[in-house]
View 1 (cartoon, rainbow, N blue to C red):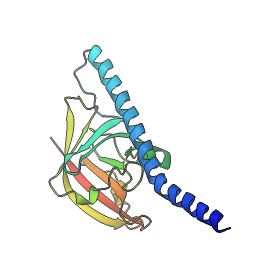
View 2: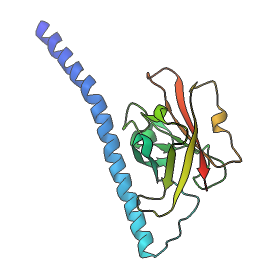
View 3: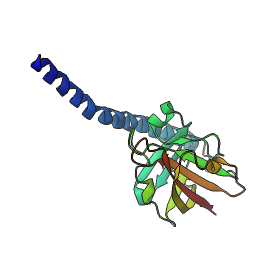
View 4: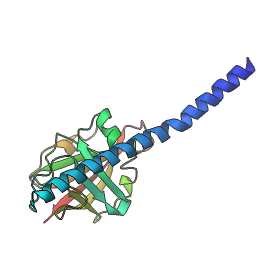
Length: 189
C-alpha cells in the first residue's frame, strides 16, 4: 500500500511540474505557426509589389514591447482558447490604426506568459504594432500609465475613446487575486 501511495505521489508531482512546461510549449508552437502565417502573408504582398500598408491593421499582427522583451503575434479574441495561443485583440476595442481604444490581453503566468513583465513598464516606454516583422510601417505607442485594479472596480478601460490609445491587460500576481495590471499608451504620429 505504501508503494502505491508513493508512486501516486510521484506521478502527481511530475504532472504538477510538467503542466506549465506543456502550456509554454503549446504557446511557443502556436506563436511559431502564427509567425510563419504572417511571413507568408508578407511574401504574397511583396509579390503583388504592394508597399502600402493597409490601415487598420487586423489580427494577426505583431506586438513589440522592447523594454520588457515582448515580441508576439496577436490573434483575434480574448477567450481561453485564443489566449492559449498568445496575446489576443479584444473586439470591444478598435483595430490598430483606427480612432479609439485598441485593447490587447495576454496571460502573465501560463501559456507563454506574454505579459508577465507588464507591471515593469514605465511611463515613456514604447510599444509597436505592425502587420509583420519585416513591415516597414509600424504604429508607435508611448506608455502613459500603468496601474493595478480589482477586475470589478473599473470597466471604463473598455470604453470607446476619441484618442488613439492602446490598452494592455493581464492578471496581477498571484493568480486568482482578482486584480489586473493595466498599461495605457497613446499613439505617436
